[in-house]
Image (tube, rainbow, N blue to C red; front, side, top):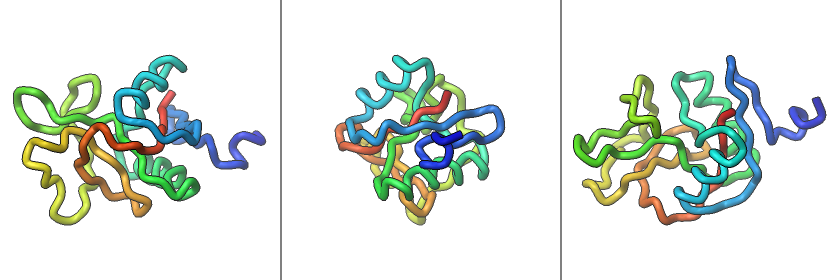
Length: 126
């Protein structure tokens, strides 16, 4: 359980959340998570959102979530295309008017729509 103690890994429900501490763009973060057998972390409830926030706080870095704006509907969805069943948008977000297709999580746990080419912390769910 040494890994848990240093905070790089969190278990929440059936999910394991892990970060490699690297900051990359959205596509690279997603690719890394898929290579290790998971996907980008995307909270489905308040507990999962808190667990991701804990990792983000520890690194003091915003992270991309596994949520994207749908090509057709313009609605934000999980990477697998399922509609969001939970959200925690920052006040007045999302506000990207279609330009910001990715979502980042702040150190306070709230979300912001963001361009996908920024460098953000990689947090995977396994």
